[in-house]
Length: 203
Image 1 (spheres, rainbow, N blue to C red):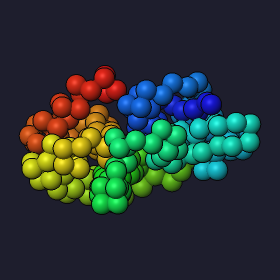
Image 2: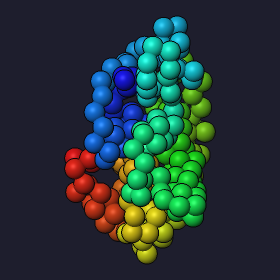
Image 3: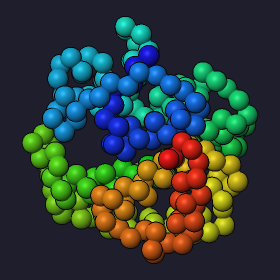
Image 4: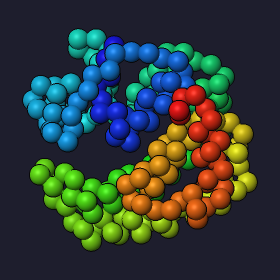
């Protein structure tokens, strides 16, 4: 198997942390997204959305979308310690929080960065006002995450899950790309973030 990726990008980083948590090793193939290597006809034959990460299972089978890739590896080694939860309620809670953090946090933060910075202005229309609006929405979501983590060790109670990985990527992106002082403003998020930083997969 091969993982086509650009490691520093948020979704590739998310998959790599997940794989490290499972102890999975596989071949990594660098795709220079900034240079548009993901937009070539050759790559688009591998990835239906033309994005990274994309997993190649064999000559004819490819999976794109980071959470779909994580689910695939989770299903390969089922256990009660699944990072997607165990049992109907826990799996639903993981799915719920992962989607909340993706839609209100990570995806919105990504839109803010792309439209404000114009990093991909050579291939998409960048609207600064929309980027600023997305940044405002991210800032409105952070207090909700802070409140939740003030009474919870991890996103789902005392169980580490893929939702924590998504939230970790989101918070780090806010600090590094949107220059938001998350750690200074939100003590519960900071404590949770430092707890995750001790895990080998995050180092």
